[in-house]
Length: 72
Image (cartoon, rainbow, N blue to C red):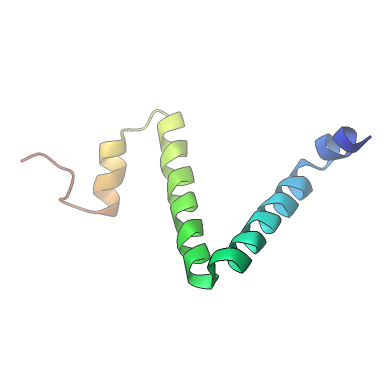
């Protein structure tokens, strides 16, 4: 019954899980460290999705930080 609910409401379950994890982080390490952690998670998700779509990560990083990743 529990797993059926999870499968039918996947978005809600993921949202509750993410909220629980970030709430715990907030209580354990503080607000700003939790925000920095969330930024790193979002950046990892973004770069991972680009990798999954077989995009060139060098081009993606060059758009974010121009001139830092291009070979001269």
